Image (cartoon, rainbow, N blue to C red; front, side):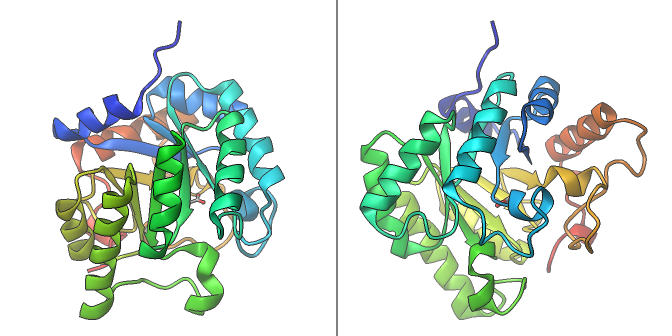
Length: 265
Ligand code: KIV
């Protein structure tokens, strides 16, 4: 019988001072390997639009795509907590948000992830009431790449930084179970991690968040496009996937990853 990592157990792990490990996966085989090796959370990210489908952005990913990959990951999972991205334009209204989050939960997700700030507080409240845990993605939110004008570090000036802190606090007060920060200066990520009572997952957010996530194809050195500075290729020093993922887990737990060269100061 596989022991499942629950939201409560992972929150306790963080309260006890232990870092959480997160990797993306999109199919049963990778989900089986990562969860068997001890990865705490598997994210079925809409990054699948880029790494699986070869698209230029995450925007073309549909609910049907997410359900398909979520179902496959759930079949292979050996105990990790499963988080699924709500794709672009699938959670604008409360009705749409509840219906689509329900579809992902029925496909096997334990938590749904939404990109955006305090304006999503009503969605978080509604999902919480419906028994659906949430992760709110702040900073560089790839679904808004057209608004940002590119994939750029966010929260660099004082006003933007304060806004991000306020957004995180509002979302946690509304019932968010996780915050995810992408591409933000390390000092801001540290401040947000200290300001909220839920686990904060970082990607390009420095070493002080409670958890780290990477896109699996990036950290396994399989991606062909130019990688952002926050990615470490764990296949560079390893000859097989198990050794690479085990090194990632060890380095996140010990705090060795991310190093300053993977962070924005
Ligand atoms: O879609 C995804 O894989 C993500 C991670 C980059 C955090 O949102």
